[in-house]
Image (cartoon, rainbow, N blue to C red):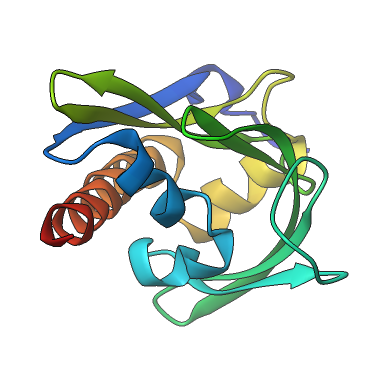
Length: 160
């Protein structure tokens, strides 16, 4: 196998925005993971597998895209604290994505994270290097995607 770029993988990627709406108005947007495709530039579709309400243990299938490249990911909600945090772990690469909400004055500080509690899988590192422009390029795209996602959520939440 070729030289690994594991040393270029950021353990945490994070972006935040202040929303002029209370957590009770922001939570319904971020906790409805079926709507990920509306906010995320990378997610094409999200499906809750097994039906039911989204909560701790909910499983999802996401279809992601970058240009002509399309790939599925499977995830499970690993943290669910209403009006505070929702997090889901991606089976294929070990990443945990989350939204956290904190009351901030009359509004909400909304933070999106991508954490790698056990590191990124070797397969994901290899595929990112071969097909997604390498670690720095793809991580910069993820950060821009987070900014875009947070701007969309902010806009919708503030419109009431």
